[in-house]
Amino acid sequence: MTTDRSVVIDSLGVGLATGVYGVSFGTISTASGLSIMQTCALSLLVFTGASQFAFIGIIASGGNPITGALTAVLLGSRNMFYGLSLARLLDLGGRQRLASAHIVIDESTAMAASRPTRRQARLGFYWTGISIFILWNLTTFLGALAGQAIGQPETYGLDAAVGAAFLGLLWSRLTSWHARTVAVFGAAVALGLVPLTAAGLPIILGGGAAVVLGMVWRPRSRA
Image 1 (tube, rainbow, N blue to C red):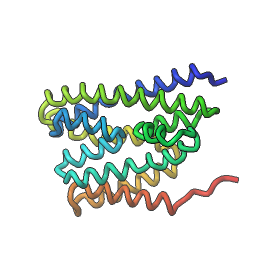
Image 2: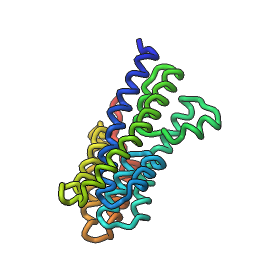
Image 3: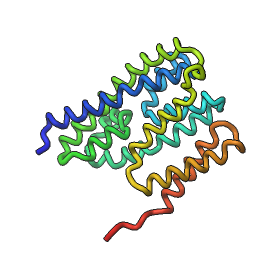
């Protein structure tokens, strides 16, 4: 039997495991040229790891900030669909929805959707989302201080860490052969466009191609 206590403990565990990852973002961000304030503002206002790493990756490779922002928005748009499903599951009022929208992320959605009752879905959502938000921003600041002290990212190979960190965030979500195939297709399109387009555009176009493929290609469900 799932108790409220076990939901809170599980949520805090997810919050701790995910929140400390902000150190890597803060380190890579300032080592790539952003200031501590800019880095902390990204974590505070954007607060979705994949979008933040994508933005930093484009900036670090010499891409246009607008291209980086568009890529971040594209990746973060999935949270809008999470919000649509959570609205019915959590059954919150208008003001509560507005106040809770900022912590609609992969982890808080997963911890809410897997609970048997509405009360426990709310517990999972809020304990996970708030604990990650607090830890992510604290560790981003610590990482930003460390990144500024390191200097040039190429010296330690941190320029490659953006891609590695992004892959680490993505990999745990590829739980089916269908999702992995779509991801590999998008990566292949992006890699093929690297020598032909400006920095940042391959990610947008590759992501768009993956979205189109994912929408038109549906594996048949087993009877």
